[in-house]
Length: 165
Image 1: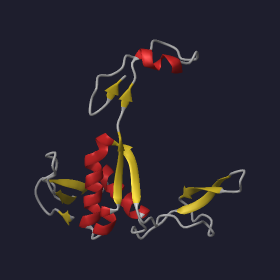
Image 2: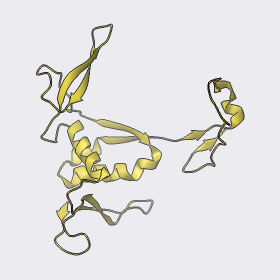
Image 3: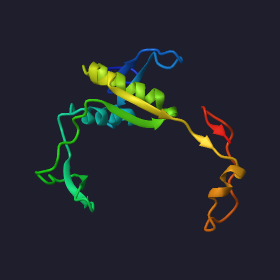
Image 4: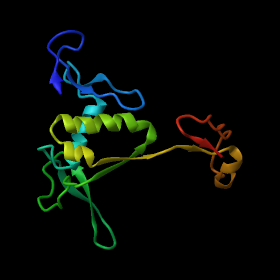
């Protein structure tokens, strides 16, 4: 990652992306805009660093709910939170379950970890991609609810690996 001193991207923090098999890459991704705004992918890189315990900062945590089996569900907090919270953000491997259409942004996140000197963690950042399925009106019929108002939307055409039943 590098800070740009002049030109159209002056003041930005950017990261060069190597080309990949599907022709995406070979460009500089803006991580922080010249006005200081962190881009979406910049936030994703920071979140991935947190998941591995590499961010150098943490949230406060407060109990959200206690389940019938006495398990406590925790919530992040802007305040200091409970001092006795369990450890969070120290994963050995991270599985990001995200739509297949996010494959390139996920590669950018992994490259961000590499650019910051965290290659092993980048290698243990797994994008578990799922595809989208669109059902025809006939296939959707068994799940129709009486509370639904208005016409049933027509299924979209197949795009990006989506299937129509």
